[in-house]
Length: 76
Image (cartoon, rainbow, N blue to C red; front, side, top):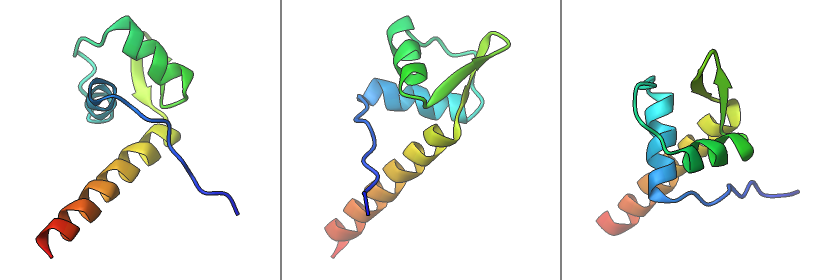
């Protein structure tokens, strides 16, 4: 069985994904980051704005889980 391996995102790309998923569409996202998030399927454009796709939400959840796991290891 294959393992889900998310596309690596830069800090800026992940921050933009987070802002979009939080509904802050008034933010300024560079065209490069916008295009990349759309290209890899983490966001899509609707009515002139961006929304996060299911894949984008999974990517964000994966990042949160990885961060929690790292923090719990440090606490041990």
